Length: 154
Image (cartoon, rainbow, N blue to C red; front, side):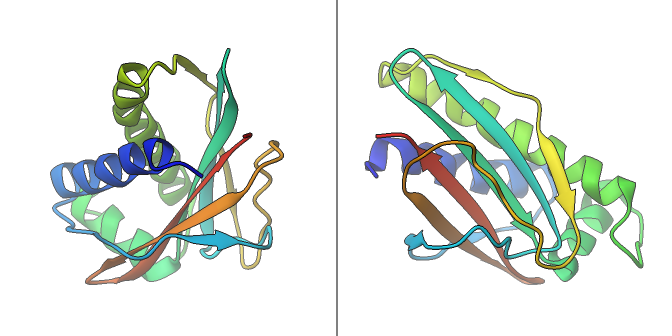
């Protein structure tokens, strides 16, 4: 997958969490993901559709990370992954992809976005709905790692 699809997501993820949650995520090394299993307990998936290509974005938070983000953004202590955590995961995915959309437009890709679909539970499946390589982008935070997946039809 080309860097022009990955780099806007990397930048947007760092910007959104540092601004909205005062969390400084550190990107790890991108890798090809060979399965559909989520790496967290709550995930949001957004479809990306344009004339030149289709794709999707998924953000997956393990429980300690989403608990930390909920606490920082909303001032709430949560003991279980609940509707608040699911809603916030969907909203973060909207903010990240909305921010990245401007960079994609500058590269000549005009995308429409679907509403986020949010899934939770151990070992849930992420279906990108697009045939293409899935790139897994790990991010480290004080509370642990979380993961972003990008899939574009090539």
